[in-house]
Amino acid sequence: MAESSQKPHAIMFALPLQGHITPTVNLAMKLASKGCTITFVHTEFIHQMLSKSSEVDLFSEAHELGLDIRYKTIFDGFPVEFDRFLHFIEYWETMLRDFPARVDEFVGKLIESESSSAYFLITDTFYTWPAIIARKYNLVNVSFWTEPALVFSIDYHLDLLRENGHFPCKDNVEENINYIPGVSSMNTRDLMPYLKESSITTLVQKIVLKTFDDQVKKADFILLNTVQELESETISALNQEQQNYAIGPINFSTDSTKPAISQNLWPPTDTKTWLDTKPPSSVLYVSFGSFVQTSKEIIQEIAHGLLLSKLSFIWVVRKDIVSSNDTDVLPDGFEDKIRDQGLIVQWCNQNMVLSHPAIGGFLTHCGWNSILESIWCGVPMICYPLLGDQLTNRKLVVDDWKIGINLCNGESVTREEVAEKIGINHSNGESVTREEVAEKIHNLMSGTVSDGLRMEIKKVRTILQNALA
Ligand code: UDP
Image (cartoon, rainbow, N blue to C red; front, side, top):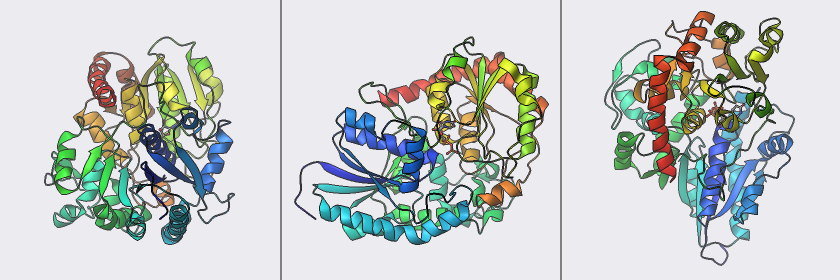
């Protein structure tokens, strides 16, 4: 390594998915604002997408503030035109096999060419290669977990789940789990679907096994995008086993000189003009995040439910929201029928939407960023989890913190098609009817249930604000 200076230097790799990019970028901003030098690495493909969706240079905010963020890109092995979302499994299988060597070469060259007093390697916990790179280049190995501590703790204790016959967990079996340190009794139905028997050979399970049986335990410490006061028992119990720090909520800032930033993979549509015409707390925001897919039937029931509710809404209907190639997912004539009742967009600036005074509720898939953003803006939720951590996150929102309600209490259905595409054979999503949708929207937006949720979310919001103060 070349001659040292006093400034700590972190090399950061974000996972190339929207829900991981935003917290990792904001972590970079926060560390840089504390005086660290950051080398921030996106894949070339993500760089192209971000550049197309925004006219502003990536990290321009950081540079305006004089923060030392050096932005670099790395080739992920596929041509730009290859659709990484459509060919998700092929992409990630190849990444698992080939990406570590590319990272190795990249880090080696960087270290040779630059000087710094200390090097940290900060990578998303879902990466399966940091330990070997950190050891080779003598870097402090920091694992960044973008989901709640509860989900981390469940994954961390795969051995306990195995001993108790809950990993792999039998499908459709409901049993209590009361043996994970710091996790109050929970039901197996709230486990992440990738821990289920039907997911045994899937890509996500393979990644989780690789990271939690091996990588995570070799990290020098873990950073968790959560708040100590929200998950204190889980975090404290984890600290008995491995050093970790709850550093959330990372996507926000109370200091206008150090703004939180969004890097959008898709260009956002203007929603403010429409929202400005609506009374306070009158509009429902509906979004299933950047990635999950559902069936056309469910989208159509939600559409009819929104119409039935007669309440105003903004709905993010991504082009790939359903797993089939069907691009015509909404009911016939839906956009004519809704007239001014609703605004349909393919992507928006979610933080701007949620913080608009006209927004009164959020129908969400329970992605962790979406939950934190909703709490930050004091917007109660209707939960419709589909995959991964979303099912477990739902428990926190509805059962533990009481700041949201379930969309449906119906029968479990398997959406093979959806699940198979992203490498999970089983999804615990539930079937839903338009009447249920309309009823839950009314419960969320007004009345006694709504009042209770609003009272509780104020308390949780204060916890988030205090964590940043
Ligand atoms: N998001 C956005 N505009 C949209 C939909 C989503 O900016 O139209 C952002 C949202 O604010 C959040 C992220 O995309 O930060 C989605 O992350 P989350 O963890 O909620 O879900 P995921 O996409 O990972 O399933």
